[in-house]
Image (cartoon, rainbow, N blue to C red; front, side):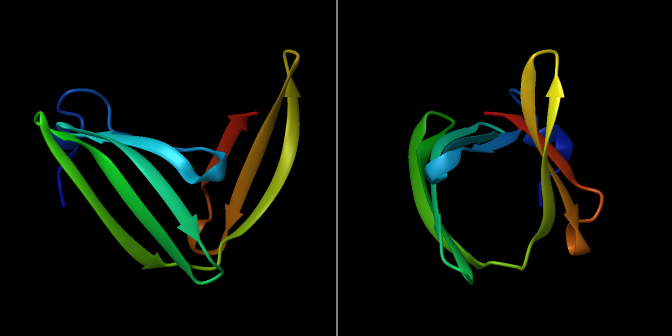
Length: 99
């Protein structure tokens, strides 16, 4: 695994995935587009991008764990935030997004 100094080498590291499984990621000197698809039991991913200016691509898969969450809307300053509060192995994780 990489330490935080490497992950945030150029900019803060992130992974952003939107509806439809399209997204982007950045860490260290890697910047890439990302595609995710999934079934009930597995997640598939592919990526294409640059690593220190060189083209990179790849694919992978992972077993999909059971995710327990509660979703609710929060109205704040004229906007509705969708908030997911996770339970089980992910207890304590809260994700909020604007649609």
